[in-house]
Structure formats: structure tokens, C-alpha cells
Image 1 (cartoon, helix red, strand yellow):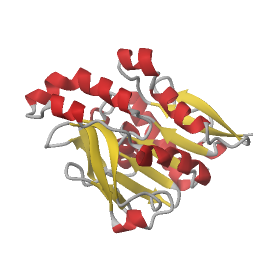
Image 2 (cartoon, rainbow, N blue to C red):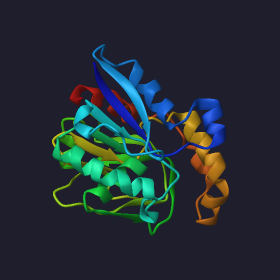
Image 3 (cartoon, one colour):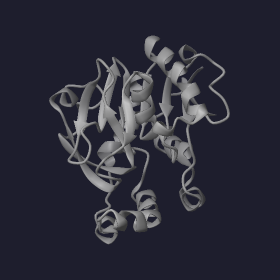
Length: 238
């Protein structure tokens, strides 16, 4: 039986874990209902070691978010980059999310770093590019859809031969494609509205310090079914 591996790159805030589960559990909850009988889910914590199996041994790869920063080059994160490059070379289906998005871009010779406009948090609109509208994974989404976001770093310089699939007013690189079946997104398709609310509650002071209105951001939180559907649709490419 084939395995889709979720590479865990960090932990959610303790109150989020207690109430809703950790990052990998949020993914599993979204994926389980659409998982074919021929596919199992496994979890590998990248902070312990690079996956023991080569990327080609897996049917697909999902890389989670993290509170770490790609530009600070944690040793475990740097050690994962060659594994990801081999996964791309072997055409293994991949989906990177938030930290996973930034790490994939950095591994493929792009640059991820702090965004000069500061943190983006809350439920915000994301818009498909023309390439996104024609993409096999993204093409069934509305041209503009809401997504949950919380990040201080972004993909600041694209890797070579990368296609921009989605953007918004804060970030020009909300979704990218690197190969036929390798994608990454800055937003969090695994988040629910309660999880996004918990993140904003934790970030109120930092958001206020950069000139945002946390209360307005909390009021604007909504459901993001289109963004979440990407996870289930990704299974078709695994």
C-alpha cells in the first residue's frame, strides 16, 4: 500500500494543539475523508531527522508550517533541502504549506526571508493568475477566494522555472508550481476558522505594533472551503 508522508516542520501554539490538534492532525482531519483505500498517511518529524526513505518511496509529500524561519537556516531544515531537491527530480507529488512553501522555494534556489511589509494574518482574499486558472490543481477554484494566513516570511525571489499561480495585495507569491505535480502555498488550507481565530488572539500585540487592527481581523475571519479543497484535490495527483 502506498504512503503519503506529512513532513512535520514545527508545532502549533499549545492552546491550538490542546483545542484543535497539531499541524499534522489538522492535515489528517482534512485528508482522511477523501483518502482512497490504496493510500495511507504517515508523519515524519523533520526536526528529528531527514526521512529515512528516499522521496521516490512515497506516493506523495506534504510539508507543514512551522514557527521557525527559513532564512535562519535551522540545521534540520537545511538537511531537508537535498531530500526535497531529489523529490523534485524524481517527480514525486509535493505540496508545501507556509514554512513548507518557503522551504521548497529556498531548496530550489529561490530566496525566502522576512516580508518588508511585516506579518500577514487573518482571512484574506487570494487571486489566481492566468496560469493558476489553467493549473490542474488550482484551475477548479474561483478566480478569487478566501484563505487563512499567518506568516512573517515569504518567498521573496522565485526559483528558476517557477510558475506563479496565485497572489494578493500583500504577497506576490501566494501559490507556486515547480514541476508537473509539485506545488506550494503560503496560505493554510488545513486551518479552520477557530484555528485562525486562536492564532490571531496570540498575535494581537505584534499585529497592533505593526499598525494592524486585530479586532477587525478577528471579525473578518470566515470559512475557507475553496482553499481547504486543495488538500483533497491534491490526492488525485498522488
